[in-house]
Every structure is written in C-alpha cells, then in structure tokens.
Image (cartoon, rainbow, N blue to C red; front, side, top):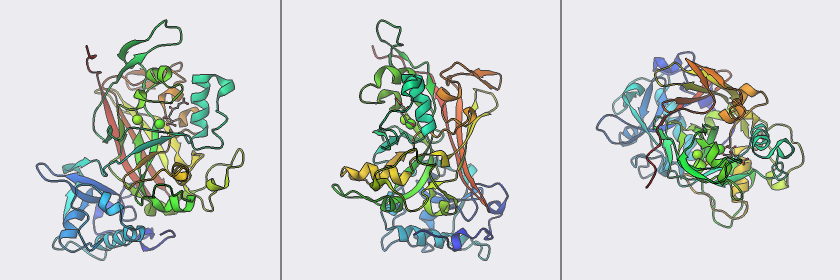
Length: 422
Ligand SMILES: O=C(O)/C=C/C(=O)CC(=O)CC(=O)O
Ligand SMILES: [Ca+2]
Ligand SMILES: [Mg+2]
C-alpha cells in the first residue's frame, strides 16, 4: 500500500449529499472505521460518510463487501479485519468507496444509519497501550517545570523515542465520563504525602496509532515495515493528574497519574486516507541511530484543536496545533518499540505523546498552556488553570488540502472523585 489511487481523487463525490458538504469531516475520500449500535441493537462495524454511517457488518452479510473468505465484521470490533494483510484493508476501502460513489445509489442490503441516532463504542479491543513523549516542545516545557530549565530536555531524549507502558483497561471511547482520580499528593514543601483527589487534573492532546499487522517476539522491524503495520490513527486524550505525577514519577515514570482514563475518538482514520497529507518530521537536532532512519516522510499534516466547556457553559478553543511538530513519527516509535524483540499485536495502541508546537497557544496540555497554573486561561464565565469537575474537553483534528479528512471529536467530561477507600 502507499501512493495515491482512485479513493483519494479529490473530485470524487458520493450519492449521500452530506458527504459532499464543504467542511464535513467525512467525505468519500475519508471513510474512517468505527463500531456503533442503535438503541437495543448489537454492535456493528461501520464507516462514517457525511452525517451517516454505512453499516459494513450488514454490507458483508448482504455480499456487498467482501474482505476475506470468512466474515470479519461480525465480532463487534475491528480486530479481525485489522489482522488481515494491508492490501485487504486497501481493497475493502475501494469496495466501500465504489458503493458510495455518486455514480451509484441505494440498493438492497445497504444500510445507512444517521450518526445522530447511533451510539459509538471502542472501535478496537485495545490489546496494549504505550504512550510516547515525542514532541520536543512538550518534553522541554515539562522538563523545565518538573526539573528546572537547566534539565529541560533529558540527554537521552534526542536519541530515543521515550515511552512507558500504560493501561489498556481504562482506554474508553469519546463521550465516556472520567472520574477525577484519587492519589498520593505531596508538594515539595510538604513534610509527608496525603491521600486526596487530584487538584491538578490535566489533558494531553495526542494522536493514537493503532497497530494492525503484528510483529513476532524477537523480531525487530524497520521504520518502513513499522509504517506499513499501522492500520490508522485516532484522536487521544491522555488525562493526567500532575500533582500525583510529580510525587510518583521518579524513578520509573508515570503510574497512577495516567492510569485512570484515556479517551480515544470513535473514528479510526486509515493510514491510506492520510496518504496525501504525509509530512516530514522537524529538522533533527542531532543524528539518530540507523534503525530510526526514515526514507519517506512518515509524519502527517493534521490540524488539531482543544475546546474546554464548563458545566452548562459555552466551549472556548484553548489550543491550536499540528501533528507535524512531532519529532518522532509513529513509525519510528513502533520500530523502537519492537527493537528489543517486544512483540507488537493487532489492537495495540501507541499514543504519540502530547503534541505541542513552538507557541504557547499551540501547546497540548493545560500544564503548558497555563505554565503550571501561573497564567490562567480565559474561558466562558471565568478562567481555568486545571480541569474542574463538570468541565468537558473536546479534541478535534483534520487535514486540509484539496479536500478535508477529519477525525470527528474526542470528548470527555470530568466527574467528581470517588470517596476515598477507608
Ligand atoms: O517528563 C516527565 O517527567 C513526564 C512527562 C509526561 O507527562 C509523560 C507523558 O505522558 C508523555 C507525553 O504525553 O508526551
Ligand atoms: Ca501522554
Ligand atoms: Mg492516560
């Protein structure tokens, strides 16, 4: 796979009018994958098209789409499909584009559901979750705040795509409320830690790469192979409790501060749909070891935004940034992940790391946007340093060029902390 084909043709239109509306996230060139249900009904696999979802599970049953000899869209997740070779992903995408092409029209067995009537579910069974730290601006900002300006960037950072193993168990789909975490809190001046709800609850704007093709234990992969293993990308919010993090993170890294919830968008935008928007990683500050070299631009030009809305209030856009700022591409992260012989599985989720650009308004966390609470942000009816109970955070992402390829929205509302265990 790779290169442009008929599914990318910017002039192509669909017989579904809302897919041709300017500004839609879901034109016929996108066709992102998700899992949805209607009230009382089972989970089905679908692709977004304009304001609708094409029911791919029904299309497979009706014989309109065929990915494999055996059905793969009946299990309520995309894992079985993602485990098929990448030329099958591509061929199936082409079949769907043909069904939705303006030259066609409704037919028996083709089921469309209005997105407004559907409930979205996790699109994949998340096998493992690894979170990286790939924005140089973010790593420098956090380093300056946590360890002082003289230690802004750790010496390994320019050589290794730094990451940690996160929790798959608490990866949830957009719209799922998140409970404020309890944790051990100890500010540097405090004599002893205490137990309490986090008071510095933060967000992290990231992209999640979803592994389709697995790699075997003991078998490293090249960056080119790693690129081909990626099925697609989702928006990802790595909710983070900064006060818990500051006390717990040395020497093994974040643990409870990032284990209580990670929100992902409902739509997996395929790597193939993003092909016209490939972008180079930023200029290297120093040489990388050869296993991290890339012969092709493996970043993507994706515009990203964060909105914050207080309970009952209007949203304010608090950040605008771009995924092309990432110093390490998802392919480099995946190649590094497999280097030791770590097996990568279908359904593994790799967070890019917080995406921050060079300007304050292009940072991907409140920690940076408010400089650890020093500079509150104006929002509807007040100001914010960190996230308050009842706040709703929404991430958005899209590519702009001859057309538009969007990710939809990734939202989450914060609920009050649970009572402390006695
Ligand atoms: O520098 C540190 O001590 C920790 C940084 C993080 O917050 C880890 C993380 O989630 C990485 C990221 O999203 O970029
Ligand atoms: Ca993170
Ligand atoms: Mg998290």
